[in-house]
Length: 483
RNA sequence: GGUGCGGUGGCGAAGAGGCUAACGCUGCGGACUGCAAAUCCGCCAUCCGUCGGUUCAAAUCCGACCCGCACCUCCA
Image 1 (spheres, rainbow, N blue to C red):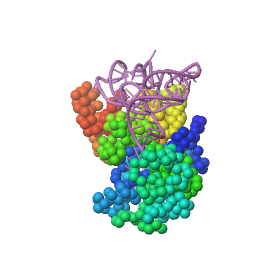
Image 2 (spheres, rainbow, N blue to C red):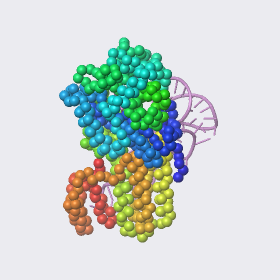
Image 3 (cartoon, rainbow, N blue to C red):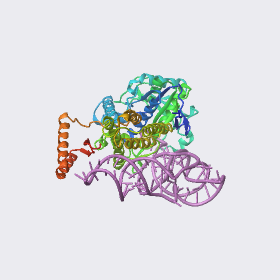
Image 4 (cartoon, chains in turn yellow, green):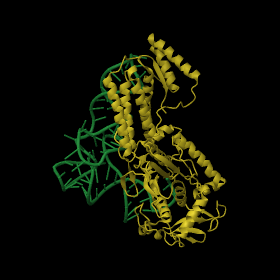
């Protein structure tokens, strides 16, 4: 297998570039995580799943990945919501951090190496702001500290705008105290009743952007490999992070800036302000987290992805198809010699080569800017190949290749975080399984007597209970319905 | 107004100079089945927003235009 080159689209340069980590074999990734004032919605889930998949792929390719995702737990929205609910802000934030993990775990998202919180990094943040003031990139006005965009010559390089344009298009009224309308707060003076911390400029709290600069620096260093988030973070959030970090450290903050596209609803961005958002846990009532993850990866991460139930139903069917192939393979791997005396050498060889070919193409797809849509297509092809091979049963002499193929198939799906083993949704006790078996045996007797009415009644009765049965020449197998 | 992204079969979605335009869903035909389910096989875009241009060769490059979306303000 020749080692192809991984290419990544870099927002900074606007091009797909060969991925070359700063330090060979190691990758540092920082992803902007949620502001924890509510359950996460589908739009929040996309970057979480996308970057988790990127991480998994890099690990699969042998990189040692250090993955950081923050929680913004000090913020206006949290404060407002806490007030409304009459709760301490930190308590509210912690609640939704806990809830975040429930959703993310369900989506099969691996935990980051560190999930830093703003509230636990005040020291680093204050030091950072102090540094910027000392270097002359920031100024103080009445307890607030602002970053002066005009003093940072590269300002606008990520979002491709210049400072004059910003001024022209500004829709917010200029704050008279700022040197330039584009200047943003590094530190905000405390208002009564709000969470606050001591600082050289008096009591206050950090601005939004500074946390990511301070925390990424702490865990990944001044310069790291990849920084990710949604498209809407390019400006102003990431632009400002770059300004802060590069002004202070004098070196490039992150080498690759990676941004995912939006989830849309009827072609419009899903967002809180439009009110057209869907909470993940509401979607989970109808579709399993695995289906949601599969759906999110079925389109390239930079393209917009429209949401509606029908799309999820299609994803559900697709995932079921992949799982069926795996299930059948497992089954055949245990039915050795049942149907066939032996498989032909030629067929076995072709099958093995086919599997290797699909793995190669899967890698190629992922190497091309993490093209999960294409990678999934390879999974479908692999499923068909497996179904074909196992169709007539698998003989003893092919058991080895079939279990190897099963492992390869399972591994590739795992790179995308897709679980081929359907978890037993609810506890199916030994007793219920035995009872189902008993019914199926009874049905077989009925079938032998050609009493199809009884046989069909048992089948439809089980189906209503969510049990789907499939007759094979040898016996009858059963499974739980799709989900 | 500025900046960026996109328009591919009934639907979704890959492909970015040259093999029959992947893959999934749907539909149709067939195999298997008592009937199903699952699976397999076959068929379904002379064509890739429109009009020009470059080229031996273009969904793929260039130009103009039309349409949609996003960012420029908290937002993943």
